[in-house]
Image (cartoon, rainbow, N blue to C red; front, side):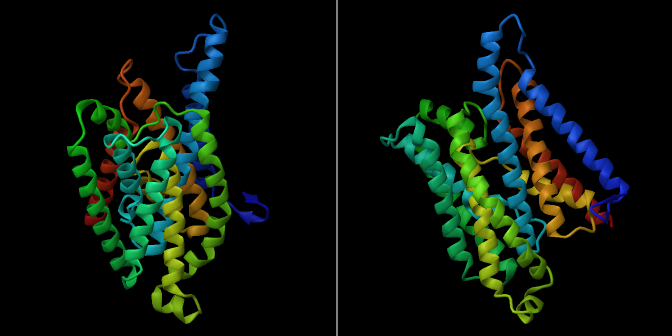
Length: 324
């Protein structure tokens, strides 16, 4: 079959249709499961529009952002094990939120996601500043891991001073959760994500050159260090926007790019980016459904489900590599 004069393989069409169907089903189930219509129409309207719709919207947009960020990182560093958690962004946002709660800073509840967003951006900036001294993608990844570990140590020191109530307040956020998401969170997140879309498109040519290797990229006129830091900075912003309201949701940036490569093994970053974003959105939405309903009426943190799936996916990938 062809689309706009370009041949589209049948397996790609089948996977596209399957992903679209699963995504539509997840959206419908996420909105309507447990809602009685029309006997409780007023209650249903509040539940659907005020509670579930912003949560579902942020699951889709946040998952897409982190999935795209994972692909940008892996392509820029030419390392399939590069993940957003090694950029200091997730830990920086968690640290800012923990300091605000434990030290009882006078920050209104409505502005706490903004504080976490600022902390996430600062954590990514520290990591990128340190990574700028490294030579080669391997050094950047190691420096990022070191910065993230240092921020994690500071976070643990802050949590050690928390009382039981403060720790319970922070627990879900530090694991990653969409509980309590409102339209205010969605309105805070959406402009940032819309601003990042054209930047991600502009970064695709640089990623195509970086995949050739540092020497070949420099030979064609690309400033390798600046291009890599710029792409990593964009990935850091994408993750920071999600960490602000939702906390550090792990492993989406690892699973989504690898799943995209499994579906499109011969594709480059230009074609993989929308697939990684779509799979990240679907993964997050389905994981949030599991978090809400598997142990109902209790709600488990979203990050626990994404981590469980991500760890299994990572083990399967390592096992496949060892046998190949």
